[in-house]
Each structure stands twice: as structure tokens, then as C-alpha cells.
Image (cartoon, rainbow, N blue to C red):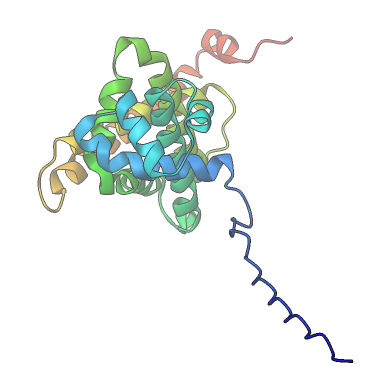
Length: 235
């Protein structure tokens, strides 16, 4: 008998590797930060518009559905996130400083300068964001964001007040930071010396007011009627 020739074995097909996927999906915070990073260079020229937001989302690799979910109110939500991100960065940088070794005026100056330094890489975008928040339709949001910023500054400076001073300090600092930021937006000098001098003058005004307030309180406390009026009311 003759042996029937054996059929050659078929070579096994090489295994195809499954496409690699990211080991971990990006969190909402990471996606927001990616969109912000992509948006700031465009915002300097285009402003905070819907078209700019869509362009930034595409560049950041964020799906349109996620973009809408992450920034529900569109560009103004991006501005709000920009401010919150800057506040978080402010707290981190101030936390690394030895603020306790500084006088109170030095702490406040350091806080204001640090906040501006965070905005400096995209100064024109920050200016456009501030201009949009100054519009009447966004005034309430602008006030809330300003409060969060100055509150972060005071807390970093070691403020522990809980009485009426809590609000007056934040109101005064809002004036200092707001006016200094406006001066900074228009400062075209290389060393930003005009802004530093402006800030120093504003802090001098605040310190003089605080001294006046302390002297006035001490003087008026000598009058029984005023002392009784100033005491907290019993609940």
C-alpha cells in the first residue's frame, strides 16, 4: 500500500493585539483642566465664546456630550472654572510660603502678587474673562468668584475672624485686589513696577483705615451707651 501524502498543517494566524486603551479614563476634573489649557491661548484672541469652547473641547479630546455636561452654561462656566482653578493654585503656592514669618501687609501683598502671577501666562485671556464677568448679566457670578478669591487669600494669611470683621476684611481686600488687577491688565511695563507701586499704595490705605477703626473703637468704648450698643445681643 502506498501512504497517502499528509496535508501540510496550516500555519496558525498571528494573534492580533487588541487596540490599547488608556488604563484609566480621565476624570471630570482632568477633562476640565484639559479644555481650559486648550482654551486660554484662543481666548486671548477670540474671547470666551461658544465657538472657542467647542474648538478647545475638540483639541482637548473631549466629546461634545461631555463638554456640554462639564460646562453646562457654556463659556461662562469655563470662566468660572478658570477662576476656581486659579484659586486652588493660589492656595497651593501660598501654602508653600512661610507666611507666618511675614507681617500682615506682606502676606496680603504676597497673596495678590501670587494670584496675578498665576494669571500672567495668559494675561489677555484673564483680562477678557474679567471683562465678561463685569457685564450686568454676570455681575452676581463675578461677585461670588471675587469673594472666593479674597476668602482664600485671607485664610492663607491666617485670618480666623468670625465676627463682623470677617466680612469687612473680605470686602476691603476685594477692593484692593480688584483695583490692582485692573491696573495690572493695563500695565505694559516689563517689570510691572507701576502695578507693584499701586498695590503698595492700596495696602497703605487699608492699614491706615484699620488703625483709624481701632482708635475709633477704643475711643467710643469709653462711652457706656456705645459700649452697650456694641455688645452682642443675647439670643
